[in-house]
Image (tube, rainbow, N blue to C red):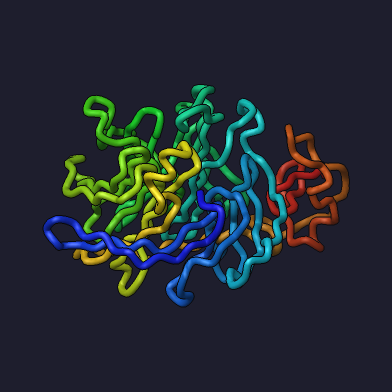
Length: 356
């Protein structure tokens, strides 16, 4: 990714003239914030995974830092480093190097995070079968497993418009899977292959989003394009060629959410490749697509008191042993003072468990 933020104005138009790609900026590392009310893409030094806003909480987000889930506080309007509180790690039995890969919330605010195994050259997981999928349950106020270390590199997530189906990318398999989805419980079932790119070697799927017609838009890393895919049969509807190879993710924004924003990377490019791709690391805006998406959902989490019997006994003690977790980062104050959640033998400060 780029060393500094660069604003450029060059546009790229497809041969038919139907849609236009505009390069907006280059960013050093992921962590910039965009919203319909804020123009531009502010620069951040933060290296982070997925970031999801918390509902009814100003400037507060759930953010992934490596394998850890954190609460991030940031106004998004300046270049200062955001403040973080580490909430915990929930796959502590996974192999070293496993990290949170992507995360999104459904229409009820249930937040999902998936993981990937340690990456090697070319962005391929070098330790197999360490990827999992979690969702945050407001009933138990903790993260619950949907898929447990059954794949190597889970990635982009999406739901269809009525939230009856759930889609997830497995980047090592070069496959997009579809599931039946229960929006009330957050459970997924009946896994099926929607599209398998291995046979044709036509895409290394990365991040993805969905439009209001229930078509997926999939970023193809190293291939230099975005594919629109019909979720009914897995057929490819159109290809958006981006003027860089490493396309990483996509999201809807702009007026009526009719602009497709495309993120790219220059991190794995050689110096020669960077010279040939000066716009690698840019965020691109694709307009004129005649499709639109919906605004992304915010996460709903337990913040005050408890679910269940409404009681929250005080507790103190030392943090539970969490591999590789910096102990001093965990809050061990009493539960009520921190709006923590009580359950079983533990009080939870956010999601950092301390002995009762």
